[in-house]
Length: 169
Image (cartoon, rainbow, N blue to C red; front, side, top):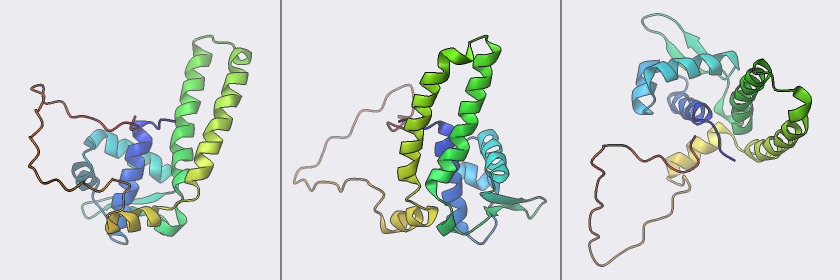
């Protein structure tokens, strides 16, 4: 299963807020730290606020913070909130394009069931657990193997394009 970039960014934004908790965090700072465009960050902060994950404080000294403790925010809830918005938009677009609802009903049910199973695993994990793992350095990355010889540096593409990790929309 592949999550949308919006969901990926939403989790990153929540992690940023959780690390700063209980302090307010400026949206522009999140954008810079998490390497998300400012426009996307504002859009996702708005969605997270509407879903009840964060609270926004307006004004010069404003910012965002978690709406409830990180221990109460399940990753599955975040994914569910963000991905269901995408599914609803896609279904509305299909209906506007004249695709018959009955044609897609069985396929939609299959994907809904698969998404439900996927999210049920994510429901077992909280934002707080992710922060603790991040602080311990156990983010799932494999430890580097020790070598006796110095490795040759990798060539950098001349286009300057950044490589995206697999599985991030």
